[in-house]
Image 1: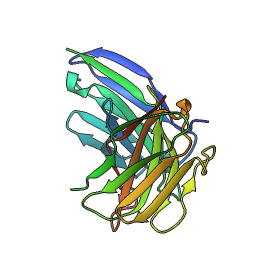
Image 2 (image 1 turned 120 degrees about the vertical axis):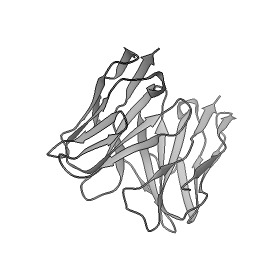
Image 3 (image 1 turned 90 degrees about the vertical axis):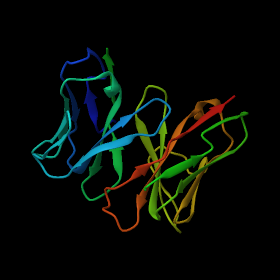
Image 4 (image 1 turned 135 degrees about the horizontal axis):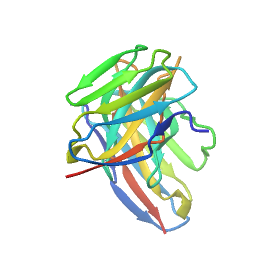
Length: 111
Length: 117
């Protein structure tokens, strides 16, 4: 059973478009992270959110943690080809700092 | 800072042999290291958590006798895939949690691609 479901699974968009990736669960997380992974490499941390309702911005990326700490979203504004990659959310179940990864969203931004 | 290395970066072996993968924190001490497996086009699956000086904790469904983990020092953890079979072919990634930092901090290695023929 996958604790963290991401949607969409795949996304192919044109440069300049906006997009949102969702990460959903029925479990409560003490913290949640978003990563981007390039083929053949390890994931790179983008952000960590710990408070319900928290919103963090990283240039064109906006991350939100759900009020109940069960879900999160990643919004990218004016996507660029350099944003192409596999986006992964990872949540730490309450009481632990062991992260469980989501199913992943593969994004391709076309020039 | 906060660099994690893995060696080898890729390995090809024959079915039935054992393969050791090293995970090193180069510029920090890691109290805990995590081992993940990633199949093509899929997400990362946590295999086990290793703490320096103690036995690793394995996730459900992961055979501890097949995937031997040793965390002998604060900068090194090793994963040995014993009697490897083609279905063990995967991308193995480690992460390290630095000593003295927030417990939700972890740094990932670049991964090791294992192909079993």
